[in-house]
Image (cartoon, rainbow, N blue to C red; front, side):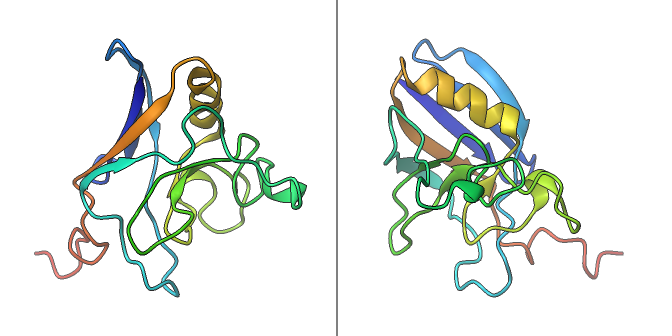
Length: 148
């Protein structure tokens, strides 16, 4: 069974297969829109909701594009207490403000299309069971504001 690991300080998401081999590591952020109540995903291991396929949005096909909300490979969601629909996805590749992985979300981790393609392809044969969140402090704690 495969798993994901997100490091909030390194801004990376890493995919491990059932043999614990590193399949790939890519740029990723948990940059949450300031209008959202949720400020960050707390450090811990979460159980995946989408284990063998990514969740797509057939009623909103424009969401599942490189410039859409979720990217061409959809989203892999995981269970975060009190917050439905949190997951890992790409999208907003050419956004005019903070394009790609750094683009704000409504609570999710955003990565790049290549990461999501690899996740999408692997989990069809190797079930995705967990995501571990590490070093994911609230934005204001790990900023350099006020540093000398």
